[in-house]
Image (cartoon, rainbow, N blue to C red; front, side, top):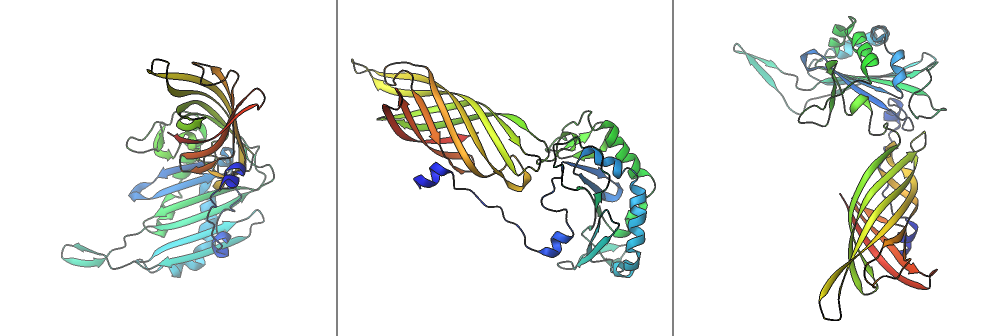
Length: 367
């Protein structure tokens, strides 16, 4: 266990599917989709747009033309759409060479649903159909986002429709106008949708996003965030509570597969001891602590930890009360075992160039 803590071997592995057929009709797993927008259509229908870079909107701003090519390619399958009660998924993937891959799946309902209208009983379809249109972008414009310079660029359009044939209703310039609105207003205000964590475009409330300006959780790039935790550790014979307040910077590579996290924190330690008269006193000893971690990223999302190859912290005593801690004391931590927001870290207090050494275990709970 100590070896695991010290080397930070412990980590959770992400589950991945080995279904080659599904991967054929998906954006490759090593591609980071940086932006995601939702366009609310009529009748409860919706379009989701995902992009590797915001400049890729230029490649789909004539979406009516893309849909006309799509309709032409899938028309030979029209007889497969005749069953109006099944829920359908149509995947359509094209590459820069103009080659197309098409897959149609139909799902029977888990029971029967009916509608009674004026005494007439009719079967009722309860699920929406899904159309996925994925394309590689050729001659892509210079990216704005911090993405790989070597990987291909993609767009991914997902239509959620009551019936697949309703896609024809939106080939009238409406979607072209919506994309133009996003292009010209993406950097304006995106107010929060009350009762949810999503945002809407102030210029057009039918356009929304999970985050302001359409950033995905894996596409927000480098960031700095505040950090607060409460900690307990031992120092010699003392039980020492403390808390940490500071900031942590996250820097990731272009592919969002690896990250570096330096941090700086103020950490008051509270020690309790009786004086010569037997009265209990509290002594506050403050440390200034530098932390550093680096390692892999799970699911291309810098907010998720995968496994750190390096984790350490180094604190220095900047404020001293009482004689419980020696002057010029350092605290060194190496390795960490994490579970949710709880961290267990082996540590060592020392002074006078490791002449006075006190080993310990530190448990932290982040908020």
